[in-house]
Image (tube, rainbow, N blue to C red):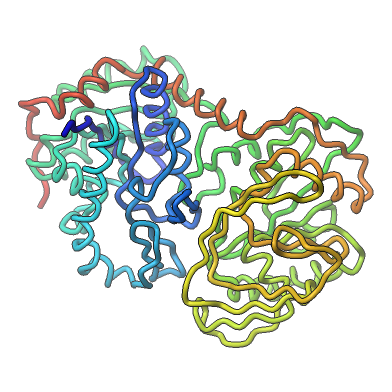
Length: 504
């Protein structure tokens, strides 16, 4: 059976740019006609996605699959950890939740047991594709966790993958990070580290060259590219607000409105916020200003308030009440000012929540703004619903333990309901359906008294494709693609020198 090539993209730190580089390499290869797939053995994220076969995976891998031009599957992210607090996470294996574990319990035994699952998934992908581009997590030099590692050097050594280490020069100390990362690896792991990629460089590359030459002299490894700092780059990565694929729109100047008015959207930054990428399609609309808020006074000038998804519905509800946001939201609803709840946000709008699963708080009063009762079930709902709303086709995906019983309302809304200017639904991703998003925003603008008109030509899927092409351009124009291709096809180069002291 033919076995495709592979590469592991590691990083000196979290958020060094591994996800971006992985997506960029996938898009570059796909444009060359290579059948390529992304892979991340273990991801920790509250931003997840449901594949066509009903499996839950990290959104970063779903977006990398889009960059590769392939359908995402559970094989691309066999282990997903969804934090539920400071010390515990829900463990999802091959797209299905298998339980909650503390960090100590996971690293103490369960993680090592999953290495065979991870490597098996990688091998399956390598029989289906010409190349598999793997993304690491955090740093490969986390020496306290190396014994149970299933995402960095553990998987690289098991599959004999060449490793490229990405460093964020914008943070400073990139030479020390590259050297230290390499020098803290065991000899067998160092033998796989084939080179480095500098990310987020500003300025004259010629001034950097002497340092890169000295780094090569110290480590025996080349730097395979210097990627310039570029605004508006990122994908649906991990949990940082600034790094989602369209979330970077929120960092840039808002395009002028198509109509006379702007539309201001305030997103409550609730604890354990999940799938905040739901509002990226709003941020992509000309004239829509999206911001994340945590104080009641910040709702005053908002035309639309969004309660997003959360991994802790009851905890988020308590947070809204403690901060005075719950009262401010209730006043908005009484005044007929628009409010949208998505997934956990929808559940918070209910009359009552029965939760013996997620928070184990039992019966808890909701905000009481929608005629809905929510009961948490042990089994998680994972679905890819589609339908029609406001005369437009709409698609989404569902990831939730809470089961909603809708007991009335002015109209049904994406399997949820609407009362006045309060909408609630379990559907993530619905706002990415262009016609539906425009129809919804017209209703919001009318309720808010704004002369805002949605632009008729914003195509969110096209914006995502443009973003993926920009990532591919970064690799094609600023990386040593000949060496990258050779590593993918031929594996780690022989004779890479050992950099002392090695792992303790």
